[in-house]
Image (cartoon, rainbow, N blue to C red):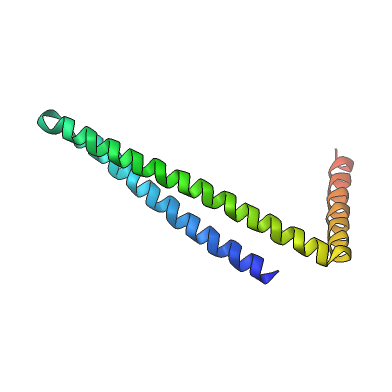
Length: 110
């Protein structure tokens, strides 16, 4: 289970870095758009289109990477449930009991 948590933390950090890089590129793009006026406009448009394409390609790559990660997590979860069926049932039962108790308490306070 610690492997799943460490992988999740690692992927979360990587995703955070990727989003920060994306935001930096978007801010640079907006700055370039503001700065573009007059003579170099056509060259600027080509540069902006190239940056836009690069950002779109990066987003596609992030989407594919996310799909891969979710698939890996689903496979890991499925394997764990098959290897530890009673622990899984116990965990689900505990979560269901806790949720039921919370709902019952919330309903009784109304």
